[in-house]
Length: 227
Image (cartoon, rainbow, N blue to C red; front, side, top):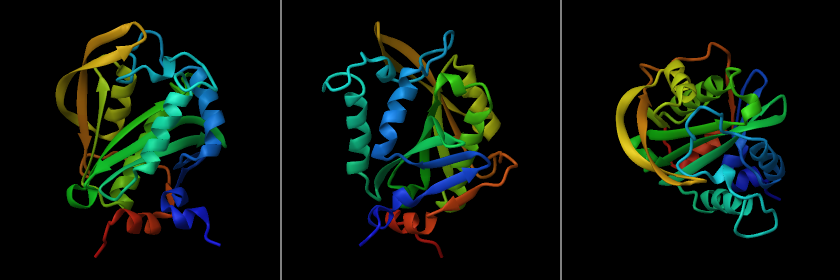
């Protein structure tokens, strides 16, 4: 009988650095993920980090219109629509086995463009310890070293100095600003986002060894050919 990792190779991906481990989100992660979100993400005094305040929706387990059902359906959709020309690697971030956050890596037409977009968050109790920077360095290194990406893009709400610091320490440089709307608990508000991009020439590695597992099968699944 085939293993699940053979059927869906993203499940075989494992990125490790010291006590940190990144793996693709599985259904068995959801109970711990819901608890992490309920313990808080946003930091008082900093802008709300997401376009929509999904993490602050009414907690209503077992109902279709509240959290966590609304968020679970989004994660399931990303998995069900996964294809070589449009994909999202939703990676759990674990420290010593404990779930501390999520790191997303998304791409469209990657075999042609070789560019990915990253986004991440940590539970409030795990912020301010340098984990966000190390996780970003791990996933950017994976994109360059194992997927042969040429660029990694990201963005953050202007005024979020914590996100800005993570990008700066990883080697991102400014790539223009855009106006947008945020859907908060109190309604929609205007905001400005800073776009940033990192390339192999500007990328700053962590200095700690990073190991990868399952990358050959994943490259084949994503249609990434090496000479």
